[in-house]
Amino acid sequence: MEVTGKTIETTGIIDEENLLQLDEPLQVEGPIPVRVLILLNEEADIEESEWLRAAASNSVFDFLKDPAEDIYSLDDGKPFNDKE
Image (cartoon, rainbow, N blue to C red; front, side):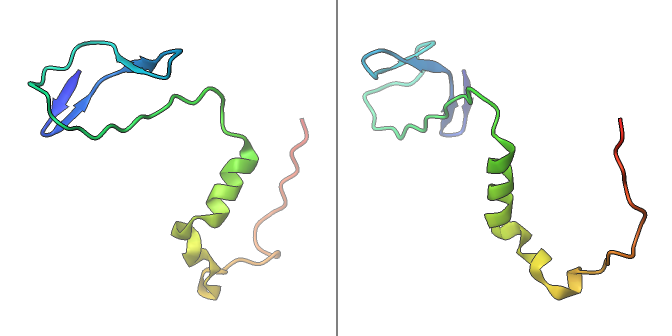
């Protein structure tokens, strides 16, 4: 368990009754109200199409839509032919 300021990071499991069971007791005097964030482990890798869709819709890449960023043409570079 890691305690940082007002944040406690620990692990646990959601049981068959959909109740959260922590792996270890909290070192906090209660009862006190808390806010709980649950981060689920990914069971499988994200599909490439999901990555592409996320990148295409993410505003962090909006600068690439600026014509000033389009500095290469089809005449630049050499063709790449991947032949195994």
